[in-house]
Image (cartoon, rainbow, N blue to C red; front, side, top):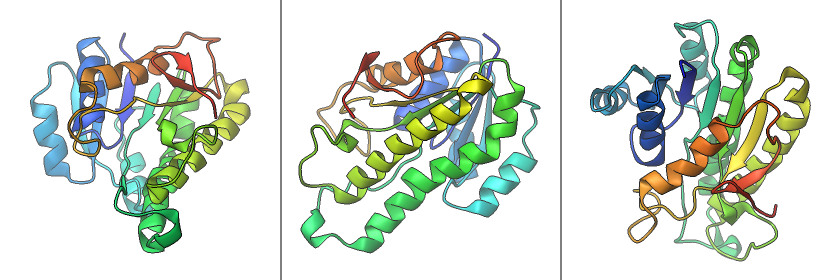
Length: 226
């Protein structure tokens, strides 16, 4: 396909699997992680063109340096996968707001920060795609109690998806939120669906044709309630 694809938080789990499949499909993949060594180790195990880079989405200086050193004049695909704090140990009624603040800094503001920094590169491409890896935990339609930091951050991420999709429609940049489902990763824990199945939802949004849906919330290619 020969697209330039950037994936955040990609040294393990869903992000790593997305990188693996994109590279196998012939795309150039920029695999990023907060720790450069972890990015390099992850990239070394993949086939195809995989470029490891350090990127901490929660650090404005890291994002600025990353963009300044980007070796390409365009980016076709941005997968905002980096996320923290699936806080099963707390509830909204007793939440540690420092944990909530940390989750918002990465899961919402980090995604926002990286997307803004890469907008010129996305606009320079032919068919920009922004995929925000969200969760049905952030759906107001089915929301209950628990995991307050994670849930609130994903709800806010979905709102950002809607706004960016509306504003970038004229640039032919499609912006969607995707829920991979409960996946057996370090964050999701044992018992979930295989990582490749979770990654499939992300790749579906990456591969949307021009004129495909934008501003939506999907799992396995099917719309979810906000």
